[in-house]
Image 1 (cartoon, rainbow, N blue to C red):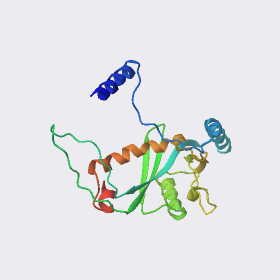
Image 2: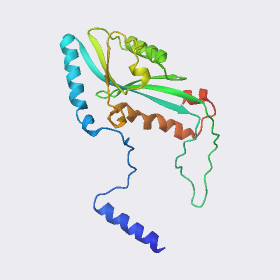
Image 3: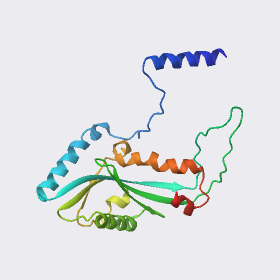
Image 4: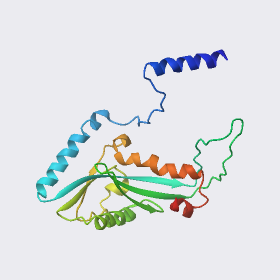
Length: 204
């Protein structure tokens, strides 16, 4: 009882000082802080080069990230009567889908594809459809911010007209605005606890 009382008292003191209990965001130990500080400058420079090369073009900065979705239970708290223990119907399965997510941070507009895996062939397909969906051309372009995954950097990647790439430093997911889509996409999964099949998962 004394330990609980001290913990509660300590929490009250921290609240008074405007502290909040939060889970730290993981940061890779190999991330280079000195490099992350200049990312915005490099992005601005590349944007300026593109604007100089295509002076009539309307150029938007978008971000892209891939997320693996599987049949893994993702529990969350639920309302229940005092003294009752809620039970969730789950079954762990090892099947996966991949969510290709694109985000325009300025407007909040998003674009998604759901595919069975990640590779260069499928990423080429997604980029081609992205260019078609937004009618990209020499005068309407997207500078796409993404990480240095193998299927992003390979010379087998075929960029459609209207799409240019900007690569983030290695081990720096905190610089990727598209990562902020994950809590939104995870929310529907958590509400279902554990989808029964990939088809159900995809509909969710």
